[in-house]
Image (cartoon, rainbow over all chains, first blue to last red; front, top):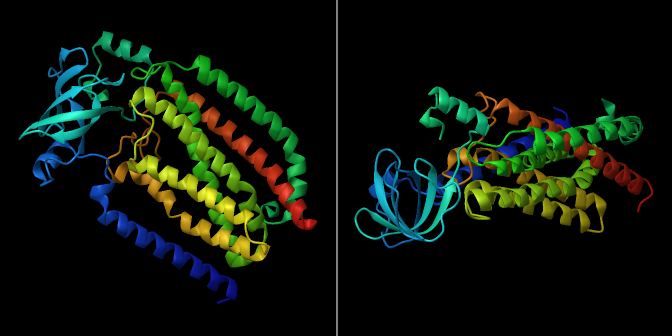
Length: 146
Length: 231
């Protein structure tokens, strides 16, 4: 083995070892790295209920109520479990029923949550607005696109 | 392909291609901007705001691509003692940093209207911020140390360490819950973007690649010149 391939081997092994070390750290810290819990993760885990947490899920259909200007109630769900949410503040443009959302706040009781911040989450699908109208007119619009 | 490792060949080759490349880059950026600003449709959810994607995504790809090139050249330079790799590292690090900065700024301008926040510390955004810091550190290493031989070796080793961040950026949206969306275009499945929006994205990506190569050629030539004359 020539000297240059010895050096190459040392470099490659070092990269792999650094990668391994970092991935081990990340794997063991994965719960803290995740930006939010899903409703079922939050309800099943034994997280301190007074702690500020974030929940990510979908705004459940037909649950959104505007209590007054700037005060809202809705349910957030991951299709397994859902949590009642109350929120005072401004909603992002993309926020609507059936849309993904991340809410920040804390639990106030067994199954209700007081939100301080709401972020809208959009998925990876991009489609011209005209095609969506077209699909809806023909009745082919699949709700899963949302 | 000797121009990829030999400074003199690189100079000769870049002298030949720089003019046609400038013209091609100009054509691509103009058609790309016309496509992304006028000819592409509004998104069904995001409306016109989706056009930020045509700047945001190419700059993100280019920031990763630049780092990958630096990694390959660092391995070659350290293992095979080809000094041209060190020249490339010094020359392209600021280019990668600028692409990362464009990506972060355009992303936060996109996040405010769509997510409702300029910035969150989720895995994708944080790992890209770390990439920007890594680029800055590489630039600072290249600016410090009187002794060039020491300085460029430290920079190359640091580039290899920072390479760990690349798979983290790529897979952050799959491994952890993030506010950032998962990848729209991945190799394994059909892209979930309409062809009418894919076209401007691809044209803009090539425009960014050509502009990146142009700036890189100028910076590499300057670096070769400086080293020849010990500036």
